[in-house]
Amino acid sequence: MHKRMNWDAINFDWNQVRSFLATAEEGSFSAAARVLGQTQPTVGRQVAALEAALGVVLFERVGKSLNLTSTGAELLLHVREMADVANRISLTASGQSQSVDGLVKITASDMMSAYLLPPVLRQIRLAAPRLEIDLVAANEIRDIQRREADIAIRHVRPSQPDLIARLVAEDSASFYAATSYLERVGRPNNETELAKLDFVAFGEVEEIIGYLEPAGIPITEQNFRLGSKSGVVAWEMIRQGFGVGVMSDKVAELTPGIERVLPKREPFTFPIWLATHSELHTARRIRLVFDILAEYFSCGR
Image (cartoon, one colour):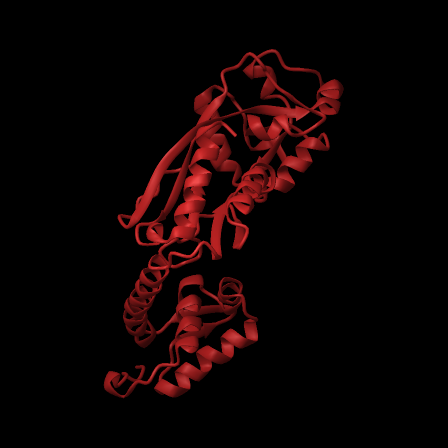
């Protein structure tokens, strides 16, 4: 049985608490270190120092895994409340700023970050040359409420109640392959012939199959010999002639040596949402960037 904490006697070191929270949510010191931008030994030392300060065991080490103890689970509830309060204070303070300088974090997929956002970043620099822009290229959804980003560009509508979300465009995507690949294997004339070709996976194969099968593409896991969770890497594999993939039509237009497969087929469509926290939107620098992005996408880039 783990020792129960005396909450009245606790004096927190917030860095230790952040390391505990990240470790509890990510499941390991190494994953927590990546989230916090620190080294694994630093995170481990901070968690150990917190355990020593409280006189309790927060994690059970089972091989390479970390499991919360009952005391750790109890502390986690309180720490999350503290983090929410701290984040709200930070959001409110940021929202009061009316200066067109400072840092704005924008998160988008790696493909959008690499291929589609550079032109609008030039517009932002012209409009506000003192702004600092941190472009977080990530295919997983970043948490605006926890300040991992100020503005998110997403293909699904954000569901959190405290977010401002605006549908700014409907984009399209189609099947593409390198001309060199199609000249080697032949150009398919229909979906059945397309399903006989190699595909390059961007993300989880099961999800791709689940999306394409209802669209009339009878592919299986055997179609996928190569893939990557990085869209930039997967697209380069396609460009190098390893197979077929689905890609934004606007990205494909920017890529030489690529051609559309089944060009008469109706493209896929997907939405583009901009999201920011309702309190952050009152900050002039974030509102300015949000509005420039919204105009850029709504005008068709």
